[in-house]
Length: 333
Image (cartoon, rainbow, N blue to C red):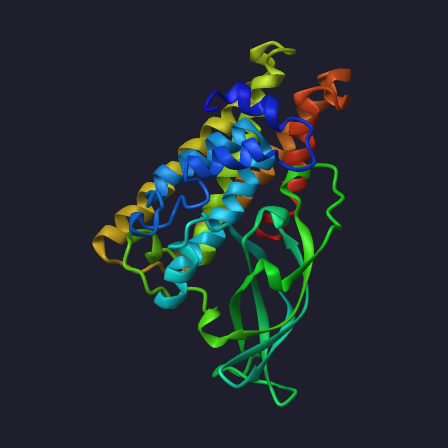
């Protein structure tokens, strides 16, 4: 099932991905895109991985978004205690991690672990997951534990799906098959299952990238893939010369993303750290790019006729997927 048109047909209009689609993603090791080969992953470089994610988003918005967010959670293998990483990633079934970056609950210190309580929102791929990731405020004797800078101490955790209650509340116009539901947790977890962003244990080059920078470029390439798909469909209705502005921003975005990817890989190879100034520059470039693509898609949309408004056509699904994706907090200004 490696043909793009076959995949599109399988993904079009579905509320959840079929077992066949999920089996294909697992067979291609896409959940483990960034995971080391020693743990059964592809161990893709940043540029290789971004190209795969762009192709998936170009194929289908929900497919690209789900694989991006879940492989991005599997990326946390680089942060996990080795015993926990071995336990999760060396079992017989491919792990699929995903969850919420929001701090919507608490982690009360108990003997040898934490009691996790709360309701978290926006877990992409919720029905497909084997483990949920979440962030929580650390509590001790009912009081917030403060970090060295005076802010509330936050840690992240990996929770097996058996300890999670999914709330099926994803009811958006697009990215429907991402099934980005909320979830509730009320359980005790061993302290070994906690981790901190940007505290990496594994040595592979991909784990030298600060998580905010990694998140920016992996999400950005999804907007590009969906915009390329929108442009492809629009060209079947409108003359290509009337789509020059959108074509040019898509080409520019493609160039910018992969030039930045090359820069990041070069800095890692040189052993350089990433400055806050550099990360803000990349973030601004990405946010401006998404804003420009969004504006031009909106300008083109009214000229596409009833096909663009009919749920029977790809154009409509792409439009809904793209603009649901723009609500992600990363690039909202």
